Length: 158
Image (cartoon, rainbow, N blue to C red; front, side, top):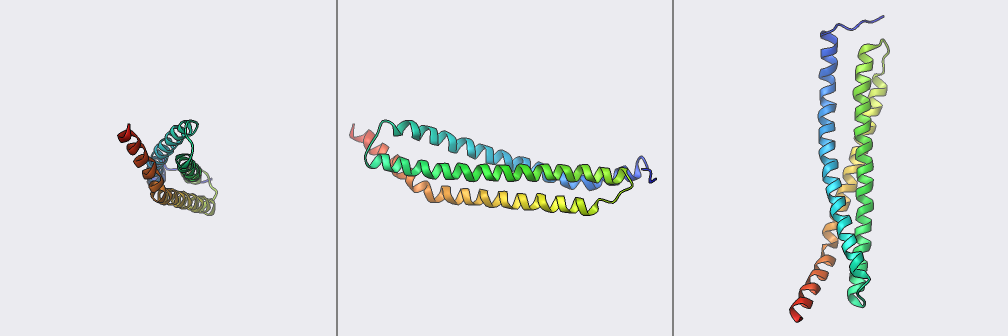
């Protein structure tokens, strides 16, 4: 049976595991950004839903249109969060498998590679959903501007 040299082999395994741990730190920071965006979008949707009950006409249509856009953005952010969390979990499994492969005499290099590739694919798709949400936010900001201008005009006329 292959025994582990207390300092040599374990040290090497720790070196191999450091890169995925840095990747985890980056994913965690990105999840923080996604969570903050989700919170802001959700807060905006709640405010608009409260306003919707008290208005009618063109303003109602504008707010309804913005709410539809906000819910699409919420769905995109949720998908990005799920994918990035999946990526982080897969990276954690890669770190665990790196240690297991160093402690036990079986070769799981192919499995480690598959999990790492899956983690990168999940992260890529999470980033794509984030990019789509940011693009959607930029495009739909005009709707929000129309509502804000309408609010200012109402305040000035009173």
